[in-house]
Length: 209
Image (cartoon, rainbow, N blue to C red; front, side, top):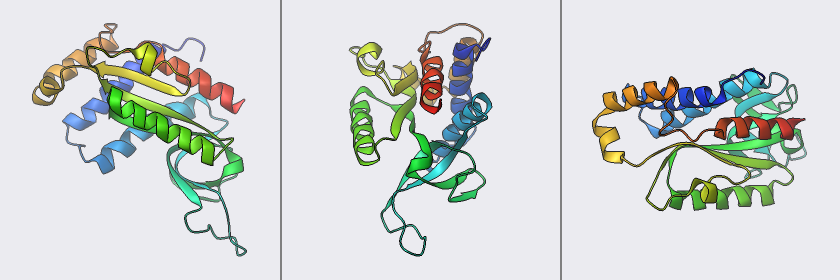
């Protein structure tokens, strides 16, 4: 972590996320996993001693060692003890609950209203899968006049990387947005919520230590 420019890394994540969209990776079934992979690659470089993958957290097995029906939870990113996978293929795993450090739900876009749904989802997960924690990561949020990051986003376990209040312009003028994001990466931070990626990395470190 020493010497890393987290705000620059955060801007690069947003840029790469939007760039994929504007070059055609627009299906939610592809765009979602793509954003998860962006985060997993960064996490794995930062925490090489633990595993990060997409997959299922297993709650209960039957007598033959198979996962019981409905006794598992699909998670965008699972942070887990390496070598303890129940099943693994590429970036997909099933892992027993007691070998999981953390679950992370990833949203490319959200809104203040949808953030309430995300918070309810996190509370429900942590109640059912205690003591496993869940974090929520939002790449971008539609910002209204009354939006307050400190009130909505600066909560333990929630991390919002950037905002936009010009939805129509962004979809109609992708080249303009890409140029704007390129400027963010070299130091302009008009849409980036500084410190959110650093806070996320620090909280993951506390969880896996």
